[in-house]
Image: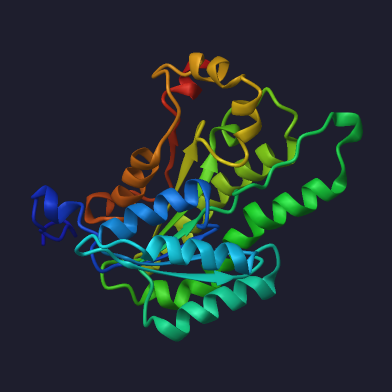
Length: 273
């Protein structure tokens, strides 16, 4: 050790290895969360996902575990509403009953949760729902899983899934959504500062345009090409993009990265400058 740096292997297979890690993914039964779950399972992790719907949990768990690939991990799904504390407690309790520690907590709480309306008609209910799910539950899940994250042998990781709309100004009237993501980005920095003493890294990925339930209407309306044309790299995001970033932030390669909000958007934010 020199200057507090622990010498480790510089080989790619060691730097980015996540095999055997326990990963908790909120909202992981569809969209970006499901992409992330598949990536970690393909790399030999045990993965816990959730949804409010018991049916969605059963379908996702069966589908994810129906993979004969050697070294593939195991998925567990828990039906819990993370919009309230009781749901967070239920999810964390079930994980704690099966696992002695948790290595990575992925907060993908935006699955299917948006609200667009003109400013004159924008309801208070939108603020209550989105701030509870996208911000408060991220804090609550981190709080309740903290004892298990502290036990991670390689140092725990919390990765929040934010949005480019939390960094720039969206063209859509999604006031509560963009504000909640901006709040999540700052919460990431605050938690990173607090949890560094426990050797837990906290980072955020500000996602751009991915195919999901929230962007389904854009594709169906034929407006997707207009969005893609405004992205410098001229395409939307895919499983390898978000999965690869999450593997990096969960591996030894990112052990000195904390409090970062990383755009994953094909250059969309820089095109708006």
